[in-house]
Image (tube, rainbow over all chains, first blue to last red):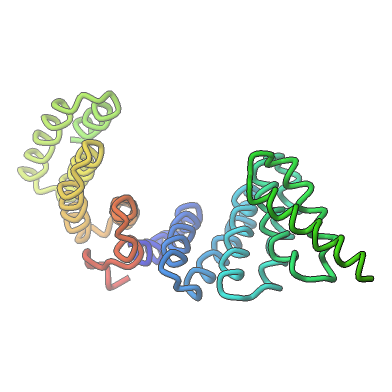
Length: 154
Length: 111
């Protein structure tokens, strides 16, 4: 359906409805693992969110784009969008959302020796914001162990 | 007829489902008598909303599809888009992901 609603809302020039339709189209295509369409839909939704000055939706679209890029193996692209989301998220003040984004970004960086310290910092912050999140605690423990091993080795 | 549509929608919000059905029936009858497909379609959308509220997905799907078909000749694009969006949400709710994304049951191919 949302492939049909997109051109309709374009035709009648309703960017608010178009953005919502693109977001839903992105969600369904991501679930169907059609990454090209999902990425294109979220990218367009992001541009509309930015044009409308909607910071919360911009934050959401950054995260969705990052997740799609992560899913299709574009680690650098995913890191870039998670960083953008995090930058925006600090200003929005939703601790849960910031914590989840920190966790997602840290997960991408944890296996990279160069960024291990960065990952550790993110996980410490995420663990404080998400004290009941077992994934955050598990990754924090893993990052600390890796850092200790590297310190002994170095 | 617009008043009947408003009353039906208000009754739906107030969970007075019998009233919704009565208003929809009256509205559709009037719309058909006055050959007003757009108004008839609008009443079908309310009927679809009622069916969704009651968890009758098959009935809701039929009502929304009929509404799109009725809206189609009037080129009421906003209403067509909004009704297709409701269909998309209906499919999404039923985990019919492919259809919520791509289904082309209602003919809008000339867009």
